[in-house]
Structure formats: C-alpha cells, structure tokens
Image 1 (cartoon, helix red, strand yellow):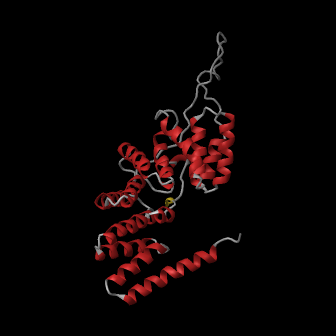
Image 2: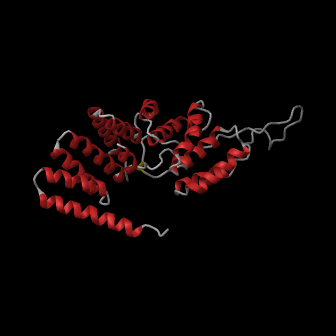
Image 3: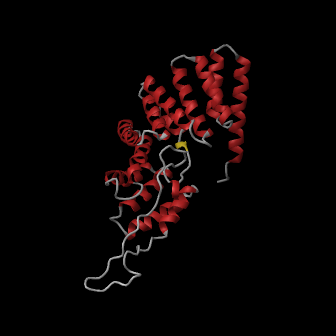
Length: 283
C-alpha cells in the first residue's frame, strides 16, 4: 500500500495547481472551484478626522505577493512559492491565509510533515476567514494521506465531500483510502462517482484516465478481469503515457490467457519508462 501512495503524487495527481481565479483545483478540473478574490478592506479613518472622498470606503492596498505566490504554485515552482509565502508569514505571523499558502507550497514540494501544522491551522479557521478557507481541509486530507494517516485523511476528505459533493478529486481520494482499507465496494462507488463528475467537464482526459486505472485496480482485486481490462484500455486511450495502466493491463491479459496481447502491453509500458528515463534532467 505504501507503493500506491508513491505512485500517485497529489494527484495528485494526480496533478496541477490552478490557483488564481480558479484556485481550487489544484490540478484538476473540479466541479467546485474557488474564486480567489481578496475581499476589499475599508481603510480606517482616524478618530475625529474628516475623511476625504478618496478615503471613505477605499480598499487597503493588496499585497502583490498574493498574486506572486499563486502564479508560482500554478507553474509548479514550489521552492520559490515557499520563499514568498514564508516571507509573508514572517511579516504577518497571525495571518492564517499566509500560513495556508506556506503549508500548500510545502505540501506540493512533498514536505508533508512540515506542511501539516500550517494546513491544520488553516482548516481550523472559520470558513469565512479567508477565501480559500473552506477548501483547506481538502489539502489537509492529502497531506495526512501521504503521511500514512489514512483515518485522519478519511475524516478530512469526508468533511470536504459533505460540503462540496461535486468535487471529483475528493471522491477520488476517498476511493484510494477505501481501496487501501480493503473496502472495495465503497472504493468502486467513489471512483465511479468521480468519473461521473468528470464526465461533465471539458479537458479532463488525464483525470478520467487516473480514475479509470484505479477503478481497474478495484476490479482486478475482485477477479472481475474483463471489466478490469476495459478500464485499463480506456485509461490508456485517454492518456497513452500511463505506464502503470499498461503494466496492469498486461497482467490482466496474462490471466485471460492472451500472452501476445500482454507482451504488447508490456512493450508499451517499457517504451514509456525508457522515454521517461531519457527525459530526466541531468543531476
């Protein structure tokens, strides 16, 4: 089961952060997006001092670093995002939103242990305390998952699913946890629900492939081989570079007594692995 967590980086995907106007969803085309709009803060007028027309109701200047850290996260520059967020936390240690972004940058940089406290604090904040607050629990769930705390992750994702039942990545996460806890009927239902939600979105082929591959894992464990084959084939049709799905497809084909087809699937998986190794940057 540890291998499963290693194979699916927060998704980690499966995944890609879209902060900015569609921050919540991080790598996914979600059904419940969060618009990151900084609420206008009314400038405080000194007691007894007549306010000029320019001062009354004028918003306080927005720290430009919010947009900087969002852009860095969106482009996968996690160390740089961490530096900006850490500077913001230093300047405003009581700002839960700044801590949330630092936790998110650490989490996306796979430093889950360091991210945990920041994300827990953000999750404990009132839902209206900062724009992303209602979704902090989703990232806390992934953080706990990668730290091996399945029970804690399940609580976090269930909380988020109750509030945002149309968010596909939370359904996917609950499916992974159910699979690892051998609750296969529930796992299948979660993956199918995620696929149903993704079917309503454009440009979500890779996300659908990810869910189909995991649904195939559930079916394979139950010896539902023809159904598993169908899932893996659909996964690689949607995302041809899905090496793990090719490998699992080969395993199913072996068990179905089709060694030539299995060999072809393994050849595809080997070619993907070789290409990935070639494309790795030099140390």
